[in-house]
Amino acid sequence: MAGRGGETAQTLDRGLRLLHLVADAPSGLTVTEAANRLGVGRAVVYRLVGALTGHGMLRRDGEGRLRLGAGVLHLARRAQPLLAEGALPALRRLAEQAGATAHLTVVEGGEGVALAVVEPSWTSFHVAYRTGSRHPLERGAAGRAILAGRAGAAGPISTSGELQSGAYGVAAPVLGVPGLEASVGVVSLSALDVDVVGAQVTAAAAAIATALA
Image (cartoon, rainbow, N blue to C red):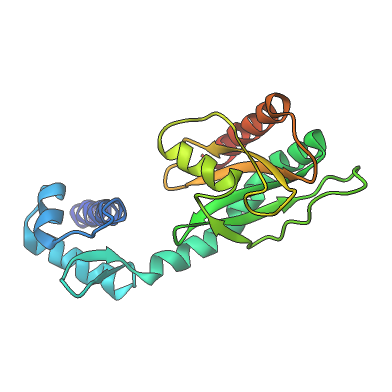
């Protein structure tokens, strides 16, 4: 029993490592490439691929390269409510501090998606920002902060009118959470003090990273 348990744990570890390798390979992996990176034989990779493909976690493209399957997206969507719940306390503090609508934005399908949104309670007017709103990563403070985070930059990013005319945004990347690309930011109808709000946004991003790590 102990021997079989150890073998099962090793197979699980290899399967998870294979998923990570494929996820980090934009052009996919061949079985040979996967075997070399895992340090195992091709037969082992074929067995792993068979099991993971059966669960929708991997697929083979037209050239036979390994790519992530739709099952991974299903798991990611099921995990999103947990991410939003973990971020809400920091988002509430940020919205009240900045007097602006606070949001957690994550990467999905190469776009930024507003996963959680909190509006301030004391302002007369504020931006209505819908959960689920999508935008290119190259436009808006939230997306630009995520791109900056990919390069290792943690500082706040500010933009004006890139997603909506007359709207101002400040955001910072959420760093240090494995498998998560995200940013925390605020959006306002009036210009924001980047020094003050930038520090608040950066602190909220750090708090959310701690909550989710």
